[in-house]
Length: 150
Image (tube, rainbow, N blue to C red; front, side, top):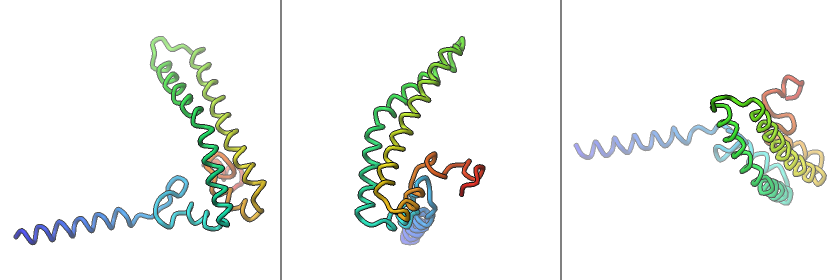
């Protein structure tokens, strides 16, 4: 009887494991599974360009880290303003302007990184680059088809 319980538990564990790892869909930035879209795209670049991509994007993330921290603070302030009684519209608008300015700074850092890469990539490598970029840069995002881009 004990043996049947152990065997059943093992079968169940293996089944759950196989189901969990069978899902190989691409999530944000193609991060799921060994054969992910992101890895497939990076494999299309020469090794030195892949290294350049990683280094440049890491530097951009590091430059943006302080801004991201500021954005968290402003986001919290906005939430507090929204739920406060009474609601202060002028303060709300001021803080949302602050948030938009921080977002513009983040976007500018990403644009600079992409421009740096694009000047060093061939046309074919830039086709791979555009697919690697986060939403909001290039033709990604939910509004891409609205503007005729796919």
